[in-house]
Figure 1 (cartoon, rainbow, N blue to C red):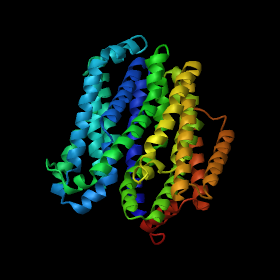
Figure 2: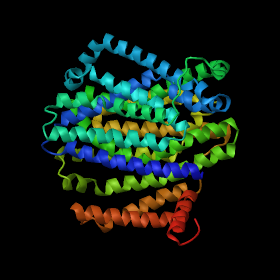
Figure 3: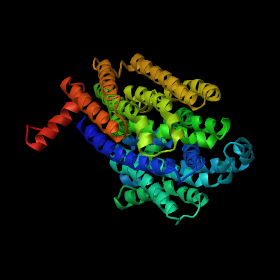
Figure 4: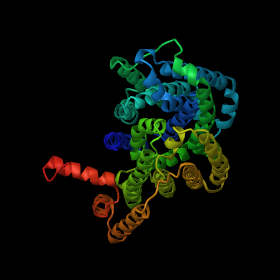
Length: 502
C-alpha cells in the first residue's frame, strides 16, 4: 500500500492546488463586473458537452488499456507494444463518427438550445475542438497511469488546464482578449494544449511507441478485447451521460438556462473538491488492481478496496462539513453575486452524493479490471434508468435543487448495486467497524462548531469555524486510529521531524 499511498497523497496535494486555481477562476467568473452569468454557464456547458463527446468517441479504449496493459508489458518489448497505437486509432475513428453526426444533426441541437441557451448554438463548432483535445488526453492519460505517471497527469489535468483558463481570464480582464466570443474560442484549445504536453512528455521520456504491426498479444486476446470494449463502452458511456445530463437538462428546460447552469456549476465545482482524494487514489490504484487480478491476489484487492473506502470517507466528510459551515460567509465575504447563495442546498445534496460515491471505495475500478467487467454496463444501465427520468422531472418541478436531489438518489442506488455485486461474487466489502465512526465524528464535530460559533460571520467566522473543525476532527481521527494509512503518514512525519522512526 505504500506506493499507492505515496502517489495518492502527492496526487491529492496537486489536485487540491489545482482546485485552488479553479476556485480562483470561479471567483472571477462569479464576481460582479467581469463575466455575465450566462457566459459562465456557457463555459460550463462547453465542458459538459465536450465530456460527452469524449465518452462517445473513446470506444472504451481507456478500459482496454487498464485491463490488458499487464499482458502487453509482460510479453512484448516496449517498441513492439501496439496497445497505444490501437487505442489512438480506434478513438480517432470514434471521434470522426461523432464529428460527422454532429454536423448532420446540428439542426436538432439548434432547435433544442436556441431559446434558453443561444450561446451553445453560436459557438457550436468550437465544442468539437475542446472535445477532441479531451479525447486525446484521456487516452494518453490512461496509458500514463499504467506507467505509474499519475502524478504528472494529475498535474496537467488539474493544475495546468486551470492555469490555462486563468491566463485567459487575465487577458480578458485587461482587454487583451476583447470579447467573450474570442475567449470561448481560445478556451476550446485548452484540452488540446495539455494533450500536446503529455504527448511530448511521453515521447521525450522514451515511453511513447507507435507501431503499425499487430502483436501476438493483440491477436491472442482479440476476442476478449472486443467483448470488453463492447460492454464497458456501453457502461462508461451511460455513466458519462449521467454525469453531464444534469447540465444539459438545466440549459434546455429552465428559462435562462445558462444563468441557472452558472449557479448550479458553482455548487458542482465546490462538490467536486470533495472528490479530490478519489482521483488520486484511483489513478494510483488502477495498475495495482490490474496486476492483483492477473495474479489472483484477492487479499490485496480487499485491502485496497477497504482502505480506499475509509480514507476517502474521512476526507469527504471533512470537506463537505467545511463547505456547509461557511458557505454564506464565503459568498458574502468574496463579494460574489447574491444569486449564487441559491447554490447552498445544491452544495449539500451534491456533496452528499460525493460522500456516498467516495465512501464506497474504488468499486468501479475493481469491477472494470476483473473478469466481470460486463457488470459495468449493467450497473450503468440501472444508473441511467434511474437518473434520467428523475433529473428531468425533478428539474422541471424543483429547479436546480431537484437536479441535485436526483443525483444523490441515483448515485446512492448505483453504488449500492455495486457493493452487493462485489460481495456476492468475491466476498469483497468496502466497510469496516470504523465506517460509522467516521460519520459520527464528522457529524459531532460539525454540530459543535456550528452551534458554538454561530454568532460569528465574515472572515472571522470562516477562519474560526474552519480551524476549530479541522483541529477537532483531525485529532479525533488520529486518536481513534480510524485508518492505518493515516497512522502510517503520522509516523512518517514524526520520523522526518526526528520524533520517532518512520
